[in-house]
Length: 589
Image 1 (cartoon, rainbow, N blue to C red):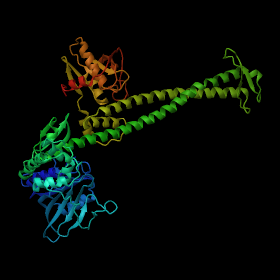
Image 2 (image 1 turned 180 degrees about the vertical axis):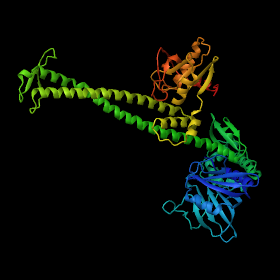
Image 3 (image 1 turned 90 degrees about the horizontal axis):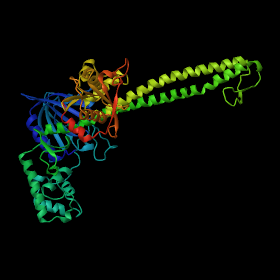
Image 4 (image 1 turned 90 degrees about the vertical axis):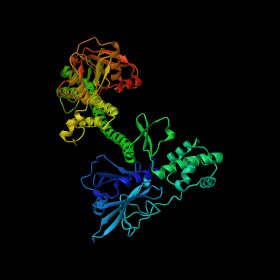
């Protein structure tokens, strides 16, 4: 993430204007990396977010509501003790370094005015948030404590002197002359690229900013310094001057770059290096970071939550697999037990010639050859008792096999259901869809319930997808709950219902209130939707069954999304992602 010194400069300017003179109202720490400081001014209140997360370290105003732990972390309690009620005097960046100080005026224990400084060090995995007393220079506490076991440069612990991160000793772009630039570049290896040279020379430059300067100079960022002459140096300095003017005038233009609606870059100015991509200007730097990182965080949260539920589904599938293996072993034992019945009948037929203690060698009249076989006998039992023993073993094994078959059928149905859950998780592309799946898993006792009934009802109201195909309205679900809703709430008896044959996927309904003949194109397109939103998305010639809704039934006690149907026909279709995407652009939901 390109939170470099240039972007921090733009943020510092923006927040100084909005927040200084405001008073600290509340302080929260929603997670181990993030502090939220509520600052109240006469006409408005703001929430300042400061984060030392290694991937998304930043500071900005936020409007997002975050849940807080029931017991505040220690660092949060320290901040509350020292900063609640304090007045924010200044937000200052150390040159163009990624270090920002928030200076507060407090009333100390003696009733005297004093200062406390909250330092934000926004340096990737080395980021930290530190509260210290500028009058003594001592650290009060930090969100991440550092000892000699983790760093050799400095220790960050309560009561220790605050030492700034090691200086970069680079030139500020506002102080740089063209001759300074040339001299600095000539001191570097000739093979050094323009991008690396700019990063090594100028304070506040990230790789993205360095590439931008190169692109605006009509130079390849990967060009080696050995190929630069006076003309190229002049072009580079012109581009640096363009950036200097932005810093001097604070004429920032918060910009996010998107690729297929996915944010891929941001900066406090337009990025010519992404000239072919969509660029959107946002109203403020805070809004820029909130939007960019918010989308990234939502995606990360979604991915993690999906992964968590997928692990549970896998665990349950593994459990079912072990249970099936056990049942199949018992079923196999039931097949073997036929010999016990035969032995019992052969013994019974030959009781007149077998005495207790004898060997039982008798003709097997169940075989065409009627060969002689020896039946194992317990010498402590009579021949008749041995026969009854074999009949009992046969009966027990047969009953066990029948019960195991019933259990195997039940487990196989559960496997089919879990496969539908797994497929729904693959399709979940937002937190609401995911919450619906979670609620379903809670209701089926795969998870413990964690949400209130009120919230659960709200989540159940998420609508299935719908679109128009040649004047026919088509609905389809994205998970089992939505599938049930599509089939049994939206569907009417003469509507057409579609589903992939023996493959987990969406229920699709073609609404047909006037009972018209459905055109082949509408049927094929609806079948393509069913195939695309199924586990067979990437397959060809996918079988899709279709029938009228009146032929689709949901037996009592079956799990969500599971149905039986009859009078179906089958169409074979190969789903095309491009076709589906064009359809989804016109959807009605």
